[in-house]
Length: 193
Image 1 (cartoon, rainbow, N blue to C red):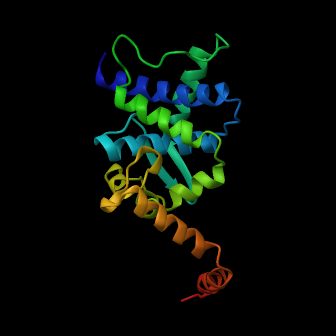
Image 2: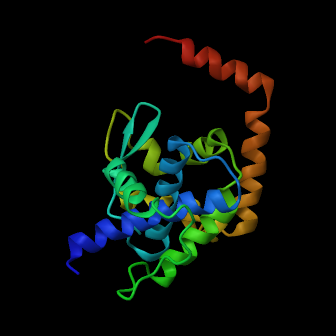
C-alpha cells in the first residue's frame, strides 16, 4: 500500500472509530465535535510521538476548527461501511493501518471526551497554543502541540506534572469565575485603539 493511500485509510479509519465509539455509548456526535476530536487525537498523538494519526491538516477559520479533507473521508467512511448497519469491531488491518500508540491515544481521548460537550471541548482547545497561534485563519502547526496540555494522555507541556497542571486548572477556573475579573475583561474587550 503506498503512503498516500495508507494516510487516506488512516484518516477514514480514525473518523469511523470516533463515529462508532459514540454509537456504542449512545452519544450524539455533531460534525463540530467530530472535528474537535480529530484535532485532539492528531495533536495529542503528535505531542507524544512526533507524528499525527491521520493525514489531515487543520485550519482555524474564526472560531471554527476545520480539518481540511475530512468531508471526503466522512463520505468514504459512510459509503464503504454503512452498508452493514453495525459498528466496525476492529480498527487494524493486515497492513497494521493504525499503530498501537495511535489506538491507545484514540481510546484514551474518546473515553475521556465522549460525554463532554462541544462547548467544554472548545474551551480545552481554546487554551492550546496551536489554536492561539492560528488566529486570523491559519493552518495549525503540529509542532505547536508540544506546548499544549493533553491531561487525559498524561502529557503536560513545559515540564509540568499532573499536580502542577491541576493546581493551574483550579486557579484558572477561579479566575474565570470571578465577577470582578469578568467585568474588567469585558471593559478591556470594549476598548478600541
